[in-house]
Structures are given as C-alpha cells and as structure tokens.
Image 1 (cartoon, rainbow, N blue to C red):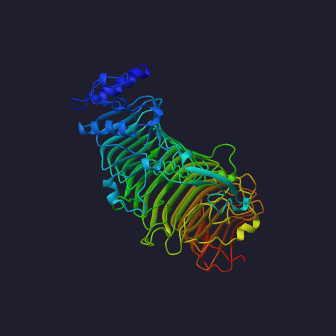
Image 2: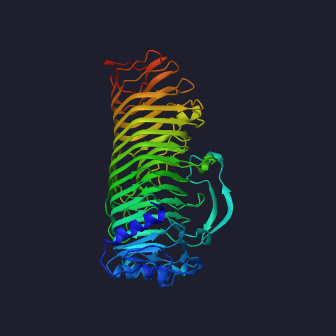
Image 3: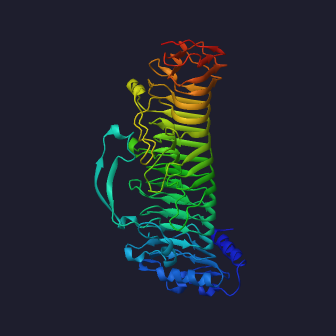
Length: 565
C-alpha cells in the first residue's frame, strides 16, 4: 500500500469509530481522503500560504469537530501562519507531510485561554503556540511540523566566551543572544487525559518545546525536536506532574535539557510524576541529556530510562557539549524513589553520571525535606568525558540506595596531581549542575554523603593517564564495591580513597601491576571497613591506613590492619 493509501486507511479507520454526521470528503478542499469525522481547515478559510494568518480557520475546524463529538482535523500540505491554537476534547490535529504550523511573529497573537488563566499561579501567564487544557482524548500527530519561528523573538549579540578553566565550573560558557519575548512551552498540553503526540517535528521553539503538565495517560512517540543549540531554555520534552507517560523513539537536538522530568504544576496542586518510561530515544543538547528532578516540588516515582543514546555533535568545543548525560537530582523539597536506567550509550558528555540531593532557593516554601533513593543505573558506556561523575548528598541528608552496575567510562580530562587535595565545596544551595563543584579529587567517581551504595563491574579508563585516584568516597555508609578496573593513577597514587566511611565491603577485585596503592583509608570516623576475596599481590601496597583512623576499623581478609602513616 502506498503512503496515500495508508493515510486513507488510517483516517477512514479512525472515522468509523466516531459518530455520524461529520464532514464529507467533498467538503475537504485539497485533501484526497474520505470518511466521516474529518475536517480540513481549508474548508473554514485557511490559506496555508505562509502569509495569511490561519489561526481562526484552524481553531474553527477544531471547535466544530469537538462540538460534534470528536474527530480529525486534517491539515493538508502548506504553511499555516498562526497564533495560539487550542486542541479540544476528542480532537486529533493531524499534520500531513508538507504541512507546517508556523508561529506568528506578532506577540498579540498568543494568549492563555481564560479558563486556564484563572487558575494559573505563575508570575506571568504564559503564551503557547499549541495548547490544551482539561481536554480528553486529544492528539497532535502526523509527519508534518510545528515551527515556533524563534528567529523573530531572539536577537543575537556579541558572544562572551568564558575562559577554558571555567568549563568545569559553569553550565554555559558562551552567551550571544537576547530573548525579546518567550512563547513557552511552544506546545503545552495541560491537565488533560489520554494525550498522544506522535510523528511530528517540533522546531525553533522560543522557550521549552513540548510539555505535558498535570496529564494522565500520555504517549509521545517518534517526535523529532530541532532547536538552535546556542539558545538556552529550549528544553526538548518535559513531562511534569503527569502519570502513566510513555515516551519512545524520539530524536531530540536542542540547546537546553533534551528530556527533563519535573513535578511543577502552575495550573493547580503539584502532583506526583510517576510511571514514566522513556526508551529508544536519541538525545543531544548543549545542556543535559536525560534529567530527572528539576523543579521537583513534589514526588517522582517509578521512572525508567532505557535503550537510548546521548551525544554531543561532532566538532563541538568542550564548553558546548552535553553537560551531564544522566542527571538525577532533587533540589526543591520533593522526593525521588524508584529510578531504573539501563542500556545507555553516552558520547562526549562532559559528565557521564550526576546524582545530586541538595537545598535550593527555588521557591520560598521549598524546605529541605527532600529525599533521593532507590536508583539503579546499569549497562552504561560513556566516551569522551571531561569531568568526574559524582553522587552527592549534603551533610545530614544522604542519598540512599544507589546501585551502579556494569558501567564503562572513558575520560579525556587532563587531571593534575594537585587536584587530589582539592576541597570540593558542598554547595548546599543554588541550582545543581554536574560541572559546578570544580575539579574533583578523583577521575572516575566522587561519592559523598551516601547511604547504601553498591558499585560493581565499574571500568574507568583515562586517555590522559590521570594522576588522581579513580574513586573517592567520603561520609559513605553501607558501601559494596567490587569488580573495579581501568587505568591506574599515573603517579602511583591510590586507586581508591576512603574518608570517614562505615560498613564498607570491598571485594572481588584484581590489582594490575601499575597500581601503586590499591586503597587509602583516612579519617577518625572510619568504622567496619573490610577487604576480602581480592587479589592485590601485584599492587605495590595493598591498603594504607592513616594514623587518624580508629584502631581495628580496617580489616583485610579478616585481620585488623595496623596504621601505616
């Protein structure tokens, strides 16, 4: 069956499920299709010439279709210049190949409908290109595209390129833009049930691209996002305060977070975001790849991310790369529980994995009652890292129950021996980002304020022969570390550094001959640290225990180790 035949079959099949009395094929100007329940905006006066404003015609087609019980608004090929379009209950807006919804360059053409504006709690009512509110059974589908026309709302200015040494301490090192107005999110589907976004291309957003907020039962499949990579705040896909969300087969390339799961809801009470699956996606960004927890004013539960690729485009300077490939954070008084991430390939992200619990001065009512626990990350390969991966709670509020398994990281960071003595700031407040703690004391993983951490089959290889330890653990309780491998520190420094840790089991490891010291233990709060079932005979020293460590705190194969320093 050819494409046109397939399209006919789809539309006719869908129409048979709808009540009778809808538009006939003779009423669908420019559309070679048949079936009840299908309307073409050209029948209502739309021109599709890219010059005439077609907002009223498309909205009229949607309104009439919804009034009659539902159906398909079929947008045939052409460029339809519009302001805000509101999708109503039981309506699917179908964009044919060659059909484009192009955002109007005039700010007055965008609005927030009165019923939504009454409840909106944000500082300024937003503007959107496509919107829904309290709708049921809606869709934005088809091979056509939605273009936010961002060049009409953004002015480019002289770029301010920050020094190279700030690549690891700032999120963005280039600014050369000024946004005059913000149409954001470009596609906002709010407080709706049974939502489908499929096949469309969303491009040139002025702010965020696609957000489902306060929705239940959402399918986002085969969506392509294309935004300029030098303009921030152009998130790709942002499900927020939504339940039962299935995202698959999407291709996102944008300037801000590619896919970010949140809980903020300005249309009403914040809701738990839960039962979210993201799979078979390709994500690229000048910010973060896959992020959970930004604007986490409520709970996030049961989140699965799998079988996907995160990458920075070829030729990008280090400061333009993806910041964190995998970013799980809770800074705003909510909670995260039950995250599973698996089968992910990351290339040229600055930070492969960033897990963070902290305070944030995001809203006055945001108190430090956050929790972040039950995170499983497995089967990850990352190439081209230039900043250490980290798992960071804050004093008194540890991250709990994290498992990392079968993780392979290749790092290109040119570490210095002096960095191994750096004091890494807590940064309890502010916006969390994987590059904002400076240079870490280790080149593989830096873990602090964690309770319940299992790491197995972790391989970290440095292309620059980094002189720092591979692993650093501080204020970590209930640590199980086994099967570590990779490049030993180039100066003979310890492979693993432990500081003020308790209930630690390090086992099933094999030291290479280039390992100087396998593990170094320091701190007066160390307790119950056990090394067993390791083959360390090729290391120059197996375990070094500093004098400030309590007597009997460290055991190797069941025997207490005397202090070495």
